[in-house]
Image (cartoon, rainbow, N blue to C red; front, side, top):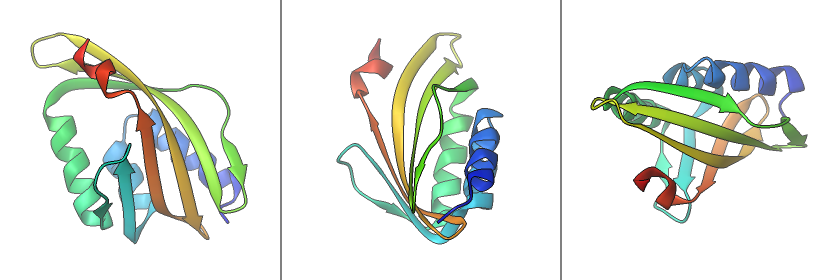
Amino acid sequence: MPSLATLQAFADTVESNDHVGAIQKFYASDARTQENDGEWRVGRDDLAAREAAILASVSAVKTTRLGPLLLDGDHSAICWRFEFTGKDGRVRSMEEVAWQTWRGEELIEERFFYDPQQMKR
């Protein structure tokens, strides 16, 4: 079970837009993530590389936490808003809920739930 201080430090890192750093610092080496009902992605290094590629595809991202951090034993949930500025200057936003499972102080599983139509607007 993570401490509330660890969960807060994770959220602060993401909200500072250090998404890759959050993966490298808080995810277990065998962590896995899933978007909606998509395929699982496995391995901290691969997850960090994918995140870096996504961030490189836009000119900026602004991350805002919407609401409190929810923590119950080994599970936590965070609601986020991301505003992506494309290289063309167009801004797209999306909101998602991240449902997390922790092993001690390391994040081992994270599932993201969002409406994929948000990014097409």
